[in-house]
Length: 425
Ligand code: EPZ
Image (cartoon, rainbow, N blue to C red; front, side, top):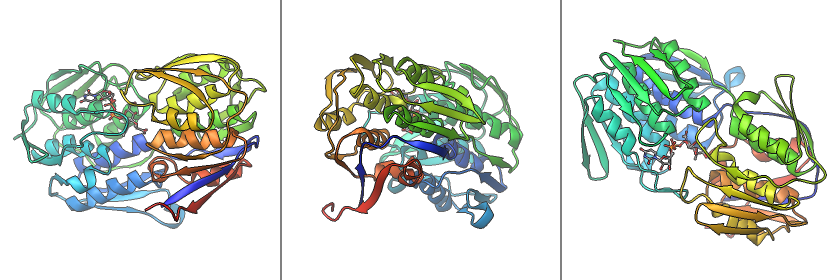
């Protein structure tokens, strides 16, 4: 098992290029199930989760392969006429986003057997809304030995009102409705840029989807869809993570190939904290201030402040000149990183879904443990700002969502390296 070792105290300078978005790539790769033929997806990040999704498609009988040479950022998927519509526990337990094959399998083959994802470090994360929606589209569902078994001759259009805004729930039902008979309306739908991107891809395949990016999405079902080529949008959370890194280290960084509009809520908080943030050359320039100001944050579904940036923003507030309040409203257990930051000398008080962060003059390097993807990114950031050496263990969490982050940070002058953690089992 690897760990990442950081020698803090360097101001980050230079340019960094953002990879394709993990949370767009996963539903888009799953959507290939909907259309027989050769798909080619470009700008697909080389991440553990992407490899898991390709493996899952492979177990069903598709061929999903990362290309080489000039096409090394691409994944080619060859989808045959029939697939074995099963997502096994062994794969789903490693990546809950595997549930994104449920809607497409049900829609194209009229049946699916998908392992229930189970709990997660950041919260219970049930899929009741996914199942409620499939039932409304006419599927018969049965829970059997930890699996959801779904059957439907052909899905029928329906109006689905989500009780809670859910990103993958919206995506799963949008894909299911694309091949359903008649019209489907998704109300209180998620508005994330990744949902919009999936709708773009499905429409390219021949679907008829309108309203993606708003909270009401309308899908007119069609008979069949066709295979396509598509380049996936940049990862706004990776871009946001580098923006915080620049602000945190009094840096001056140009984040290339990111879409500033996808980061409005994050940019507003960085500016309120004293950073200078400006759109430049198709990217974002971020300059960190000498002194950071405290800002309060409340995570919300898009276009609110993203929960996937909460841990990174918390690190920024650990060294701000004053106190800030961070409220996590999307997941019930997403403050695990705070306990590790306290080990680095941060002053954080947790009360349920709220954290009060009192800024300190300096963080100290220490061995710390990553508990989930964004928590691991926050510990890397803390290590960049801390005095001395920080060792972040269990970085397999990081590799699920960040492509070669230590190499990108070294490109900005950071003293960071990946080493084998001989002590870890
Ligand atoms: C997506 O997860 C992202 N993952 C998450 O990113 C992200 O944190 C989350 O959306 C919120 O933005 C992918 O896109 C692959 P939700 P998802 O369904 O879809 C509750 C990362 O770090 N809920 O929008 O699983 C749920 O428990 C990851 O990249 C139900 O109650 O999240 C949560 O409290 C982490 N019933 C809330 O809704 C349901 O059926 C939002 O969850 C579905 C969700």
